[in-house]
Amino acid sequence: MKISDNTSVALPLRNLIAIIGTVALGVWAYFGVIERVNNLETKNQLFEQDLLEASTQKPIDQEQFMLIEDLYKQVEKLQVQQESGMHNKVNIEFLQKQVEKLLDDVEKLKDKQRDFANGNNY
Image (spheres, rainbow, N blue to C red):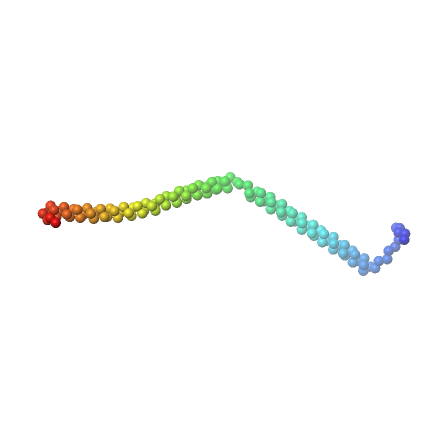
């Protein structure tokens, strides 16, 4: 079989149109996939860049972190003071009872002294 530039090929028009349509559909699908991959890569790069920018601390953030840390220290001090205050409350209540008992004892002693001074001996 000899092939030259004058060789003729007989191909039905239906097959030729099917081949051209298949090639066109393949090219369209290929470029659609390439476009989608490019979009995803671009979004990924933008996301990484935004993430890196967001991770850097700005002076405002550093000041806020320092203020929060100071507030935590103050809260811890207040908790310690509150706990020591609870112990003081128990001590104060105990001392109040002791003072009331002492006042009762003093009143009884005064009554005995008055009775003794008035001549009433028991």
